Length: 512
Image (cartoon, rainbow, N blue to C red; front, side, top):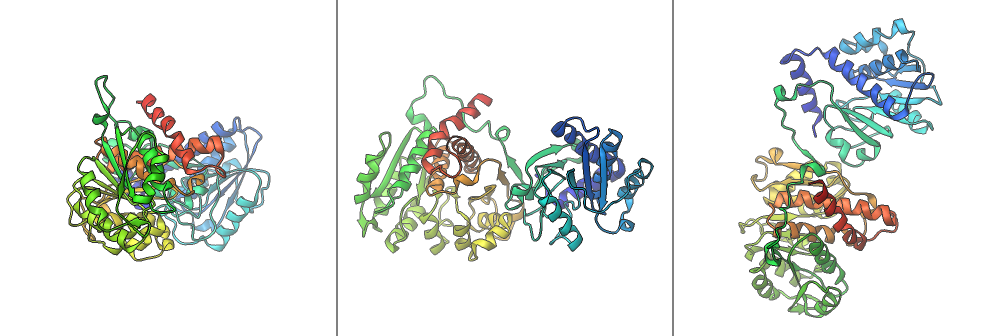
């Protein structure tokens, strides 16, 4: 996964250090687009295609694709959006090659054609110019599909933001590497199928270190060790979940069920006294512990019993359904400060952290934070809209500020490891990964509690906190995708995600 600046640097290094002419890289890019068109639509002879090209390098890729389409017998029309006199460099070279083929720029009006979007590339910033915006709106209104070159025009390559009109493609042929903004909302909804094509970069010679990774099955298969015949439940860890309050007993239940389905050997739910019975009645395989309560939620003195129970746990999840009373928040502070085991903070655990932001600094164990944008905003002192406007920056700032692993939930959940950074120092270099699974149906109450249980279970089984968060968000999202396939995105609930966890994990076992 790369940023726009890194992609430009790769282009420059391939040309300058490895001697690959820029025109050759552009030729390879345009041919890759043409080859995808063949794969997607079959023989192109006599089929209608309309290539909409800008005046920069992205337009040059479109010129090459148009040439290959014409040579293959397709009925091709070309619209250069902008002043053709501005086309220069390698793009001008490929534009001139269209003249002998009878291809000249025409108005944006070829309705009924498959469209190739080569208007704006990864270097574009801000909203599209009026003439480009008009072409984008025309493409989106036309009934024929659009294939975007490298990134849909109007999507910012580094953030996924769409400050103006943006192409909604059925597929995006992205060149060399996928771009960060393609996995972040709202840009992710514009890409359609993401098709990654190599264009001839000598990767070994360039020694590329991407600033962030894309969490896919192949990257996490080494997560869990195989089970031996002589293993027992104690070999797979113990999760303590501190949560629940009157009216919110379901949250720790979901977290516990998810932890059990994620392979942990033992689970204990520590809940306020009157909530404990409701929790116990819904969990056959987990243990429960009644904690002192105050007005239906945790009393501050409950921290002592929770810390005693935590001595036997490999990880502690704090927050699901805990409530926001002052006593509960003080209890969370005492629990977190006193823990030696890794802690996963979610929901009201994060609200307590917002009130007492130094609680993580006085402990040596790992911490994983799982905020949604609203919770992230409270922790950073900004709005949820501010977080969504720069999700990468927000995840990095949170991770650095708290010295923790952060899983910033949402479309393309971000996982950032800030344990080796301090606020303002090294934040940009902190390992960061973007999840590739999940769907809008997971925007339902309790889904975050399920994720908390999954991550807690993986840590208790011995995974590093960052690896557990990456594997956890992937499996959680994959289970959500399986649940959506069965129930539909509209009707699925968090319990459906829990029920799909075994199949999601089994897929990884089969692939491994």
